Amino acid sequence: MNGILVIDKPTGISSHDCVNIVRRTYSTKKVGHSGTLDVEASGVLILGVNKGTKLLNYLNQDDKAYEFSVQFGVTTDTLDHSGTVTDTSPVDQLADFDHVLESFKGAYSQMPPAYSAVKVKGKKLYEYARNQETIPDVQARDLIVYALKKQHEIVYKDGLAEVKLYVKGSKGIYVRKLAEDLATRLNTIAHTTRIHRVQAGDFTIDDAVKLDAITSDTPLISLSDALKSIPAYRVSEKQLFAVSNGQKLTLNHDADLLKMVNEDGKLLAIYAKENNTYKAKNVFV
Image 1 (cartoon, rainbow, N blue to C red):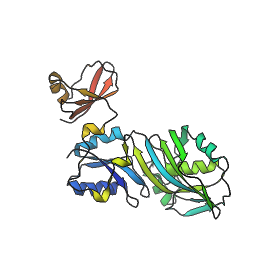
Image 2: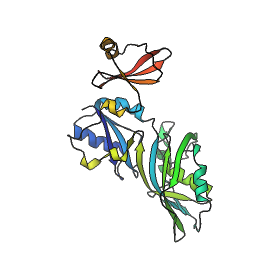
Image 3: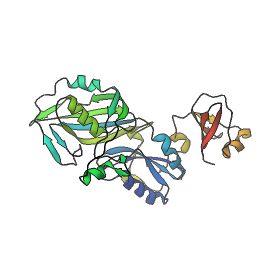
Image 4: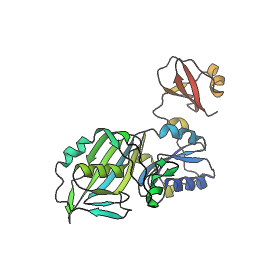
């Protein structure tokens, strides 16, 4: 049992909780996850099982897409619905909403929220926040927003405004913070009421299995199929010994990474280009 499992994480449990459930289900300790999802977020979570854990670093660099709902006029300390309300400001109209959405596309500098797992001096930011300690300065992250759009029209009611949005961005984007930054540009305040990840790299919510539906017979995505975006190089019989032992290869190829496969398409190794040669990053045989 070596491969990747894509699950639809429910709200209310952590990504590590999902790892523990899958460990018990497949009777193995070698399970890890790529791209942590907040406890109150749901959706696509990629897990590596046994040798699949070696692929997580490659999958963790991928772009992500989310559907999320935002309520304007109220904010919380965690920037989502699970936190304590810290401020209110009635909303009658969100002027130029579509124009402001458009302004986020492209380069986007984002400061990680106080309630996040970013580590500073050996402690996560949320540990400082929960202990009511001074939160240390952190650097903003340079991200890319590829798409940000409405999924329905804004609903105004009782001095609040609610809207469902879709965003696709680069690795590391915090949707809760994006909602706050959006509200700031609209001269108001906000928090998220729902966050659902619908895509992580090449995997979408349609590829995901419900956590409570997983059994020991649930098939895994093969190591080779999981690395869809890395070009494959079919290893000859002459090269097989070298690849199996992680030896350097001189190949006429331009790709930065290659997945070395046998004639059956089974993943043997991952190689990275260095100058005029390819060196082994991970060997699976």
